[in-house]
Image (cartoon, rainbow, N blue to C red):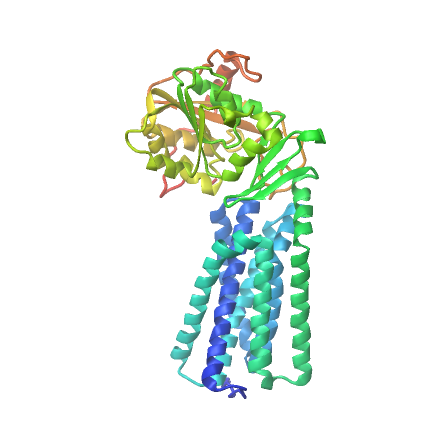
Length: 533
């Protein structure tokens, strides 16, 4: 049987009624896209690999929208009530999704099932909106289906544009992910409820109107309560993730920066970036000594450090009195600020940024290298102290194009030291970095060293969704030393002596790495990244 919409009894002229419906479409579309982007952003932070998380969220949501459209056919005879109910549920689920996803990660160590569940539920509800709105707009004034679809989708797409721009430029930096999602849910509930309770109130009985008022009031009250409690919730969740000794937590424009331990706590100082352990004072010297000192065997007057904003690689470089200048390029100003001002972190890096030979630059390493003028003096040593290549935002910093920029800035006889992940855990990733460097005609020497294990509370080893720590039981740190000519794997003389590595140990580390070589791998490029396993 073909359903023919019954003309609605409106309190306003039909033209104004259509405008109100299209305005509601605009608002709901903006809210829907904010929910999608919020799930993608939070999942990328909690789980990692932004490409995979975006693919999961968007594909599941689009699939669910199709299901929602089919289910909405059953609601067309009571389209106004159905739309109000859909918007109330969508506002509640979408508004609470960020908080619920973070809670699953913090207390249960599992974010993926919650991510798929929320993507599915939100997608079904968003998919149900369009058929119901189509019915409502046709009840105001009948027009050909093509014209109605064009009007509806125009408002929908413009709303999606506004929501898509509002999320990164307004909601995220001003309100944060939790409060931003809760506010979006509140706007969603008000828009859906107001449309039905005012414009289509003639379709509802008095009892139904009061039921909708109560339902929307309850949704708004829950969202407002959660917004008021978002601060204590974030602190409790952060303690569940990092342990109870969080000293500093900063959400910069780049990432979340957290410092735990140190001071009078008696626990090791730990630095986390986006939930991943980057520094642990118990064993960081093993990593930084292995990263820096093999590259310092030879001329080293001018040194460039890409990443390493914590100042610990700088500390190792400054152990050589004949170093004339050190340039640090760090993407996150918050990390640089903490390395200079936090007493414990500054003590750990020996006040490296107070040395007049050190210059720091805030910026993306790739773009900074591209912007250097041709006449800029080359560097004797370049140290790449960057996040693991398996993390999607870092992939370009392990590409053939990136190493081409680096190679151009090497002085004759210069050396490049690269932190290339964990050879034991991810050998394919490590040897792909090696193949990428060698594709430029550089010679490379691999070596690996072990960490002592991470003993603090937090992200290492408490669930499959926990972000991988740079140190941990059974983990290793693996490096590549590269140059234009074949080069030895040696350590220069330095005082005081290194704590974790000697010449025999470095030679053994090189032999251990070579035994696992994977030949025949292709280089990674910007257009064809090869670090996914």
